[in-house]
Length: 277
Ligand SMILES: Cc1cc2nc3c(=O)[nH]c(=O)nc-3n(C[C@H](O)[C@H](O)[C@H](O)COP(=O)(O)OP(=O)(O)OC[C@H]3O[C@@H](n4cnc5c(N)ncnc54)[C@H](O)[C@@H]3O)c2cc1C
Image (cartoon, rainbow, N blue to C red):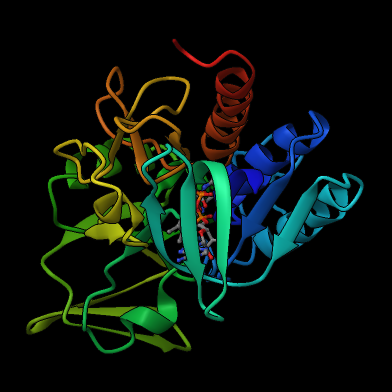
């Protein structure tokens, strides 16, 4: 019986496990190896880690976790999580084994729905970006296209002082790398730019919120308070998959995810040592 089962090995789950390991709480972290920023080779806007390869970041944290005997890390997916009658949890793993835990921290993130447009998937996270804070500066003085969407107006305002040129394009029907740059095609029109910003739909990366019957927000993310507590006692959620009521939307960033993971980890501890009632 673990004190905490942390599902997810991105910044949220890694930090939650670090917090619990430092408090000597038997913790199992599961990681299926599919990270939201997986296609990116440099992440930005993160103090002490600006420009670092996300894979290197995760590897550094894995090294830090190795110093804590109470944290066990397995590169394995969970397939199902359920709450038992006594308020503890059971998870089935991809190898068929079953683990038991007093609490669960969901940190499985979101999955971007990459459109079925030729070239798009290959360029997502490379020359096609979602966030001006994360990848705007690298396009300083260069040619930028923005796919029309409800977010396009904001992106224009944010990127105009940074880029050399900014133009909004209709829904993209093809992208292709050429010697001159990235050719972005919208129907019969095309432009050649250095980067494209696109606002994609996304979905929960894992089915556990539904399996556990957690309350969701309209955003499609798990309803949590600032401490990462969900609507089900003993279940916490941190990172991209969760949405705090006071924020207008889920705030996807590495630092925000790590911060939420730390609060969720400390909340697990508080609830274990000072259970309500
Ligand atoms: C293209 C792109 C570029 C980005 N660039 C930046 C940037 O430069 N700076 C920045 O601050 N933010 C950036 N972000 C946002 C950032 O990637 C996310 O906010 C951050 O990764 C969220 O962390 P997380 O821990 O919530 O989820 P993730 O990092 O997505 O981690 C989810 C974890 O859950 C695991 N998982 C999922 N399902 C299961 C399962 N069934 N069993 C076990 N494990 C499971 C995954 O394997 C993974 O370990 C970028 C996002 C995108 C899409």
